[in-house]
Picture (cartoon, rainbow, N blue to C red):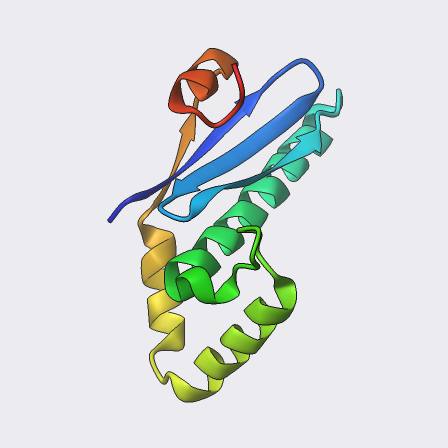
Length: 118
């Protein structure tokens, strides 16, 4: 299974979202004018979305609240159990991260994919 993170920029923000069978998860960051700051923010944004995707792939519904949002308390509990009880924890995390693709799209493609409202 290949997981895709869709990344695009609009007038004032950078966006990264991933579609899973449980829903659409992602973040938006302010788009700075400074190119160095922009590169740093993009890296941080993609890292946070990768972390969220990793947690959802490994734990599924267990870490979601009743509204379908990621519940950090449930994530911490699930990750603690996984860290202590799964000797292959690091290998599994690395494997999932290898199969995450970053795909740069534009705003109209995001609308077609159903990530944002039309």
